[in-house]
Image 1 (cartoon, one colour):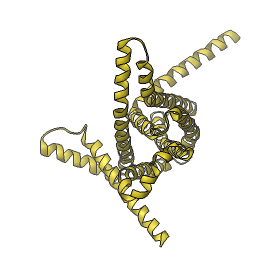
Image 2: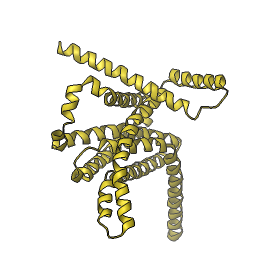
Image 3: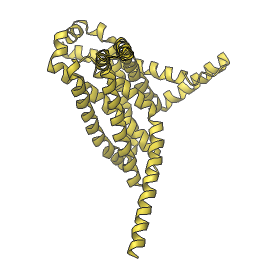
Image 4: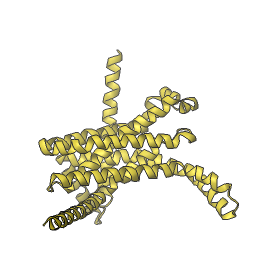
Length: 298
């Protein structure tokens, strides 16, 4: 009897693990879009520090990301159980903050010209304060993106048991963090890999090394653009999906344009409108912040 009970227990555990693997796979597919934005944003956020400090900065942000998810997983489960109506408003606040940060990056050179030049001086880029600001900014952005990933994942297992929900969210949180920051570490060290290959004896290795060195600056510039755009896409998307009025308005507008042009642009237009709404929302918050600061200073 004891042997049969043990075999039954092992079978139950195997079935549970199999179910968790399947649900985790579904959750990972649904969060893939946010994951791409997370990767672009974090690679862009940690760029600009000294070469020998890149990996320590990535590691510091990764640790912050693990802490974020350690907070977010039980918090999401608690809110889902006790006050599920709070999830959407909290996500929308996070989305608006992303839009605000994106607008700050885009409009910063015009709004804070002197401060911006001072903050981006070479001396500041070398000091510890600049590095800490980079880490804090990246962890702050990661918190919002992680929250969206956790909530999307929670939505895929909303009808499952608490054990399954906790297991799936934990698997997603760990794998996503390792995946994102592992790739970020590889991206920021591409130029170092190029230098290493140039010193190798074979010509083909040297050619690859020179290619990587030439490619690295363009990749970082691209990631800076994609990272800022991702703030509007993710932030705007959260705001649009959190507001039934905006969501239906975008759907109707896309349908009207498709009918007018006699084509189907549904794969592109919603994303474009999300970005535009994100930019407008961010610009409104930036303007409100500037006005508030002006009144405080007077």
